[in-house]
Amino acid sequence: MSLHHIRTWAAVLALATGLRLGAQTAPDFAAAAAGDAQAQYEVAAAYFQGLAGVERDLAKSLEWLEKAVAQGHIEASYRLGEIYFHGYGGVPRDLAKAAEAFRRPAVADFEEAKVYLGYLSFTGQGLPQDRERGVALLREAAARGQEAAWKLLWEAYAEGGLQPLHDAELERMIEAGAAAGDARALEALGLRLMLGPEDKRDLPRARLILAQIAEQGSVFAATALADDIGARLENPDAGLSDRERRDLDVQFKRMVHLFAVHGGPQGRDAFIRVITRLTPLAQHAPREADGSIVVNDDLVSALAWGRIHRGDPDPEPDVLRWLREGEAWIADYARIRERVASRERSIRAELERAGRGATAG
Image (cartoon, rainbow, N blue to C red; front, side, top):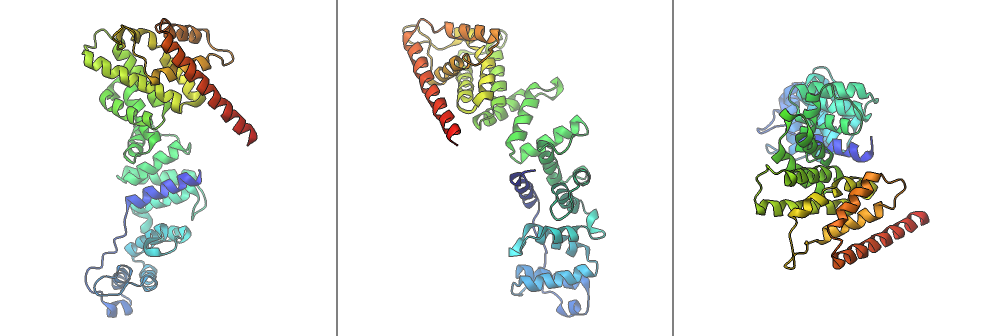
């Protein structure tokens, strides 16, 4: 697991919880000094947060918290783990001390503590790495409704660290990742909602999600959305108005443009699939006053990429045929041909410069 994703996991945990030591009334210092664990916990809370007329003092807070922990105060142990895990209040982060606190008797049974211990075991921070144990703990916590555990399970799955037990678990993990704004989870969710089992599909929601992710550079999302748009435009029973057809045509061309901008080799492969829509869509394309088809810059870029891709080794015969047919409907318009040729020259120059830079590096 990369450092970036370790930090991502930690961020999920930070968002999932907060420190709530909770001293709202003046603590009983006499009882604390006499050894009352609850009073010691309340004194620690007062010093930590500077509440109930007590001046904030982190060192004293940790001292009293440790005393309560030593007497088996369960919540004190859990809060001490939180403090060391997150570095609350300016206390230096110490994941080994956090793990020690979370593993104390009774504390480890807290579902919240299982989330932390699952994370620490899976990533090997503060504890010897044991991914199997980490996943088991996260699953226990997730089954008890800990949303942070579901998000971390998604992270583990996305990193290749676990296999879902069944499709329902995978679906729940994807939903949790998507709710956290993870682009990979949103992509997976959009594709499942569009292409998954019939009883699981939600096309309006899928289209919204895929459009969002396509704009962020997801070639898979742009491909799926372009295929969906093309199928709707080609369907004679779709009952689309002229306005709806124009709007969908604009969206389709936007998806094609995203291939050219974000795709790279993978995007150009996906582009080949989508370019096949050009021929059947031509009959619906907007027209200039002289009757010629309106071809915007997005589509010019797509066609230029297509010409470049045809120069790749061993192109499939069907690809060549579709590209020729895709370009045929603008072949009579010299101004369009020149725009495509100009864009093609520009792209080739950019690729050549990029190639020289890679060689020099």
